[in-house]
Length: 299
Image (tube, rainbow, N blue to C red; front, side):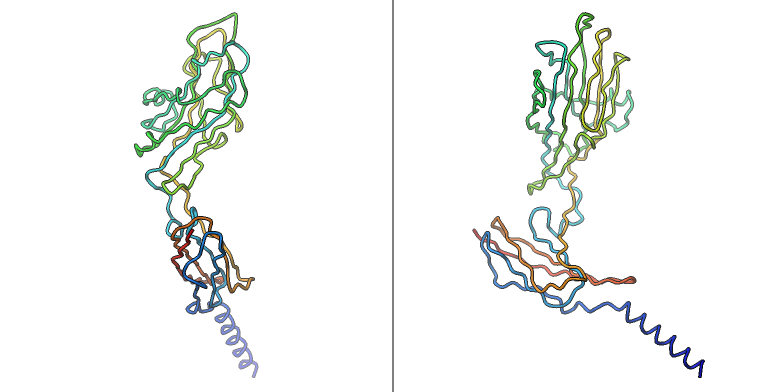
């Protein structure tokens, strides 16, 4: 009798475990629209049938396209650079000839003096506005599309180079207050390639051993020298101008929620490819169903 009882308990336990790990069926999950066309600013109502545990919504808008969920590279990006500068102390009027902005698309990525010097560095200083003594001077929008179109990794350099020694007066100290490098893909979606803290700066000193650029997460500073000529560089890490962030969906339901409908307002006319990704999951397995709808938004 005891053996029979034990066997029954074990069988019950096994059956219970099996049921625990069975997924709820998703074959009946569907999404419907109240009507086929909507106007800008009008709530679009999506009606759900079925009982998925989780739903992720892809609106078809910029950054929310299901087909781009794994995309990390796209050609034709527009690259722009903005920074703010400050020329402190020293000479008046400001000697701007000592500060340069360079870009290279053939730098080999080895952060050593020989590799830096052997790379081709193109001077784009004239495309930037540098401080004439005012703090937080905007550089203006510096377009780097001609470099991005080469489909090569690019690096940027700020160079502080003096041509005369002035024992009686020090050169101005240059401060770069901010640094923003952005990529915009053909669909108008923006990716931040780097800011001051993430640009991966490396400093090099080619002349004037007592000085080099000072690097912090908030700013770059030149160190002034009135006894030697300076040739100090600070270089970013390399950037792929065609990189972009994968699109991401919006979770709108989890297992603890009940959801029978969902609404979204579109602010621009167009045809949107909307996707709902429904997932049921447990400790051992998961099942996913994707439902797509073509949505027409009129003016």
